Length: 166
Image (cartoon, rainbow, N blue to C red; front, side):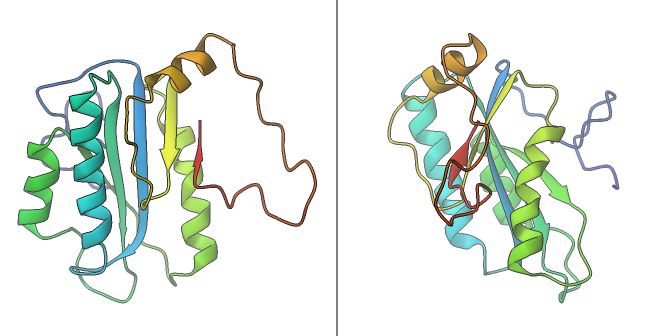
């Protein structure tokens, strides 16, 4: 993956801001973006960042983007990048795939496992908006107060079709 503007010497693909806040993160992972198709998700991430900051969350907000395979763009428009970075959101780009599909977008959720610089990462679907500080979920998971989810416990749904998980 090509280095991003603002990349630090440690080699992480996250754009660092002045406010590296700790060991927890809330992650949004968006796939198949074009210049206009992801605007709602960007606005949601901005709102989530503001809500979490207002409620004194210690979690970083991370926005990982995979641009659509059928377009030449490799980045969001500069103005959208600036909105995200100015609000304290850490921005990273994922490699494009040959063909965008629901399946490849679903598999991107596993990108949270690459975020080893954090003790816990709370993945939220891009249309999920926290309305309060959600650090207690991360703390309870980290401290062992939550039982781990070990798989689909019945029903026909896929365990990957989750709007959030830690």
